[in-house]
Image (cartoon, rainbow, N blue to C red; front, side, top):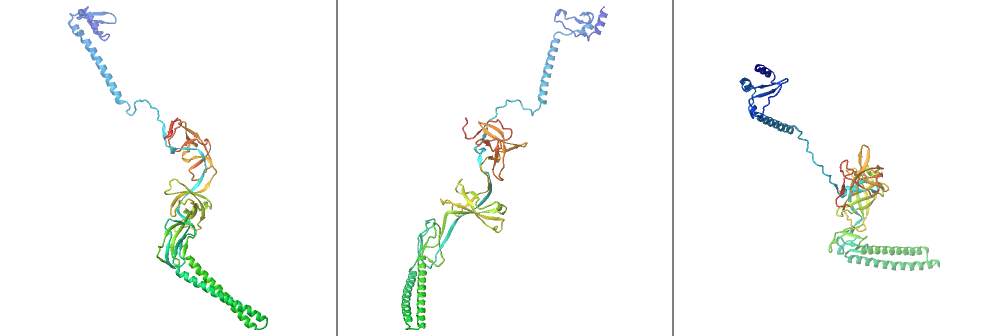
Length: 433
């Protein structure tokens, strides 16, 4: 029986795991559960006891080792997962609310009616229309100069005086010559009248009367010559007092009292600043578009944002030597005499202009897949508005808007990127509601 039991249990060790009893009384035997019967091996069977006997506490240590191995396997798996995951993948974070877009004042412009113009840049030098260098007409010593640079004078005011003693003596001589010529003419008149009466009574011949008539004609001519010479000396005497030929401002004083001048010597330079002339060079290719009466707007250094206006008055018929430009002359009213001669001006000449039309800056227009639109700003939100454009003037900074906007609506003229519709925005410095 024991032999059969040992054979049967040798054939069934894989059918069931050994079960260790916790009862000390059963520590010496092992029970196997087979498929058909249960066999008990006594502790006195040495061979089988050595083969199947499990020491006490060995099962608990085996279970602990299994759990330790499982724990190490889990830790190794976690480490491997961390090492193999995508390092570029960012950890999920909470998306903060986008801050409002801040715009400068110049980034927002209102749509409003404007005159669209084609402008031609120009620059040039200012000069007075009326200016002259006053010269002496007689020779002599300068007795007095009554004006200095920058002084205003009116027409007829005395500018300088020249010594007139010699001129006065010459004039007095000519006046005396006139008186003598007058006396001679009166005597010749008496002789003529007397001889005419004698000729009528046939007391004298016709030849004698003709001689008397000739003497009378010569005396009349001498009287007229003396008068003319006296007038010339009077003019020279008057010219010794130099007067302003027009109202203006003294720009340069060229003589000093005590100096000697001759005929045609320069005394002072005089300018009238009430009417100025801007001379500007224009490319010859643009001349066909330039016409008399066109308006020019320009600024002059030192006057800040003040703008001056002029009108094309004349166009030079030939190009400037050594260049392909033609000088145009622009008349500028200067009633307050703010502009001075020699100042440099920069501006634009209006070549073409339209009637006032609703317009926005070109920089506000956005083209996307054939759709024309603008970004608007209203109630702190950016909107996108499709617009229809009208005819535009070449080189004009503005473009006509025929539909899609109303006067007064504000558009954004700076580049704020794409897909900004609905984004909150505000203009720096403006109070928000």
